[in-house]
Length: 219
Image (cartoon, rainbow, N blue to C red; front, side, top):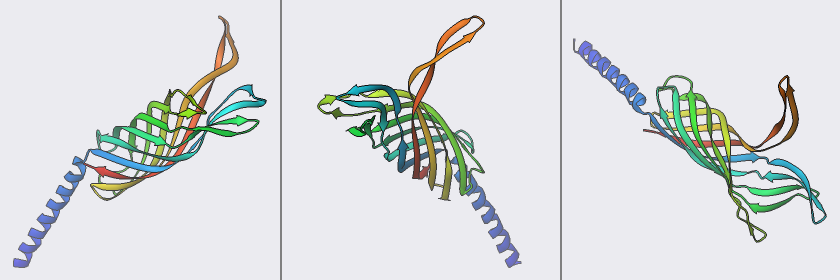
């Protein structure tokens, strides 16, 4: 009889612990994820320009270390809205007759994001996909005694990765992210219809391909 009572008490306590743990995990709706990694970047082509006997035909953004932080709020156990800010250590370079680096140029990204997390809210392993819209800012310093203005352009960002939670409050993440930034449009010819013709542009984008790892804190 005593064994049955102890068994019943243990069973009730186990159920209460599981219910409490489930509620504890579900209540954690805010996630902060500092991350660190590396970005592979490119620039855009330009109309060939001759300077001092050299021909310049492209402006490049160099690869470099990147880091940042993302903030997210779970509207339900799968959908998360948030904001991401990051910085890439880079340099502004030219290509043409001779390729050379002109000046150090950090690249900043600011994006509002939407993330879909697969699986249950209390799962320890969760794949995810994300997308966002915002801006990329190129911030060169002084190049050969001349101040170079910052440029801020519209960009989107798209990523996928995996989150691993050893416990409900802290986890780890791996992510691959692509950020195309609209830089300019070159004349791309004419498009004609029955009501006339007009000039169309050939849009050029500078791209960042980023691989990062981070730590996730849930509150």
